[in-house]
Every structure is written in structure tokens, then in C-alpha cells.
Amino acid sequence: MALDLFSPVKLGNIALQNRVVMAPLTRNRAGEGGVPQAMNVTYYEQRATAGLIITEATPISPMAHGYPALPGIYTDAQVAGWKKVTDAVHAKGGKIVIQLWHVGRISHPSLLPNQATPVAPSALKPAGQAFTYQGLQDYVTPRALDVAELAGIVQDYVHATRCAIAAGFDGVEVHAANGYLLDQFLRDGSNQRQDQYGGSLENRTRLLLEVVQTVVNTIGADKVGVRLSPVNPFNDMRDSQPQQTFNYVAQALNPFNLAYLHAVEGGIHGGGESEPFDFATFRQLFNNGYIANLSYDKARGDAAIASGHADAVAYGVPFIANPDLVARFASNASLNAADSATFYGGTEHGYTDYPFLTA
Ligand code: 8OZ
Image (tube, rainbow, N blue to C red; front, side, top):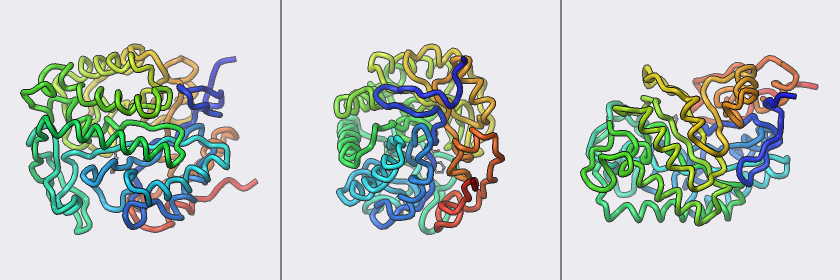
């Protein structure tokens, strides 16, 4: 029989009971100090029947923040808060990895320690506005990171990975997508450095590979995934040759023998039209597990798995509105509609109160 969304699979060391993955979803509902709170535990626990939960993007340090009410993964209190999440998911038989995040230039001084200027590969101000506690405010021109500072950022990923292990996660996903720091280094629209971290593909990929290497050394390659978004223009991103750039990145990740590569296969968050891109070739260049994401429904998810394009499929908006998405797919039930007004920030409403199927 052909494989489908309900076939179990192992991604590295992570055994999934099905291939319906919960995509990382920013929800801006963490407690004081970036500590996951009770409603966050309930939210993830409700979705534990996913084959794998990828948490919301989670800052690895105070300088990695860029939006209100994000959780973090760098203090003891945050670890204790996340431990309640992983315990609840594991008690329901689920698997959960945490997405490690540094926003780079997609931030604002009001969100950073001592009103610091956001950091980036190059001092290029992104078009658009930051979501701050004072409302939307124009992005500022970021400060180009000095080469000597990069080792400190790599160390922040190591610290966050150690915190993730202490918090009981099944692995970590390195967020290198959607216009945040690692993606800002990869794409030449945001990286105009003249040193060994800019210019050639080898140089633009260097920081990502250094991060992946140290994270792999910390937790083991079979518990590490990487997320890329080759043609997502969101956050004022562009690359002059996306296919060449990201084919190179996919191949450069092969030697690590990672658990998986996770790809956003187009543009998201209303960033505009995405460039054409051959995701079939990109996927074939990567030797290990592949999670596909972007507007898949059940039929397209099954087809992507049956054809061998993907090993698993990540669903975002459907998981916001359907905690029991797996059961609904299994019984071909209709899906709850998602309320976009409650995606970012707020209370339990639009977060933990979407109805389950009734038996
Ligand atoms: C939507 C709003 C804020 C952040 C991403 C972490 O796109 C995000 C994000 C999405 O990866």
C-alpha cells in the first residue's frame, strides 16, 4: 500500500505516529519573562495527536526578540514553563521540538535590552513596521554585526539547545526561514558583507552551518531539523538567484545527517509574489527527511507523501483552528474555520477554545 499521512515515520531519532506535523505558529501569548503559562500548556496538549509539534518560534536570547509576548528558551523559569508543555504532550503520546529563533533586523529597540539597535548581517533597514507594545513602528536601520560577535550568537544557540534538552524536548528546529537572522545571512538582498560571512554562497551559508554544527554537537544530529523558505518575500527579503542559493544550502546540510529539512514552499504572511522555484529538485538534493509546508490540504498532503516528495507535511492555520486535525483528516470530517483576528496575541479565545469533533 502507498504511504500516506497516517503512515508512521522516523525523522532522525524522532518517531512520529503519523506524518501530520503542526507547523511553527507565532501566537504571542507567553507569560511574564517569556515563560510559557497555563494556557500555552493547554494549547499544545490539545494538539498532541499531531505526528510532531514544532513549537512557535522561540527567541534564544534577549537580543533575539522581535515581537510582544514571545516565549524564550534561555532562562531557568522559561525551561520550567516549557517542561510543563513537553510533559503534557508526552503524556498524550506526542512528540515536540522547539524552534530556535533569532529575529535579527526584524525587531525594534523598544523590544530589546536597554533599547538596543537590532542586529543584522548588514546595516540595511527592512521596509515595513515592527509590532511593538506601543503599536506598529517603523523598522530602524540595524547594526551590522562585527565578525567577532558571531561566535557569541552561535553560543546563544548552544545555550538555548541545552535549555531545550533540560525542558524535555524531542529535538530542536533551527529557524533559518522567513527573513530572520540566519535567512538574512543566506540571501543577498539582506547580506552585503565583504568578509567571510558575505558574498559567495559558501560565505553566506557559513553562519547557518556554524550554528547547525554546534547545535548538532550539543544534542545530536538525529534530533536537529532546519527550516528554510527559499522564495518567501515576507520581511522584505529577496535573493538574486534563489534556486542556486538554496540548492547549495540543501546540499551543504547533507554532511550533518540531520533529522529533517523543513521547507516553506512559497510566500507566506502576505509578503507579496514569490519567485518561481523548483522544490522537487531542491528536495532531491537533500538526503534525509523532508517536511513540506504551505497551504497543503489532506489530499495534497497524501499525494506529496505517496510520490516521495515529502516525508511529512506541516499544517499551520488548520492546526490553529482544529486541535484534532489528525482525527478530522482520518474521518474526512469538515474543518473549523480559523479566525485570523485572534492569531496574534490575546486570551484563550481563538487559542484553546476551538471545538474538537464530538464523538
Ligand atoms: C508571523 C508573525 C510573526 C512571526 C515566521 C516567526 O514567519 C514567524 C512569524 C510569523 O517565521
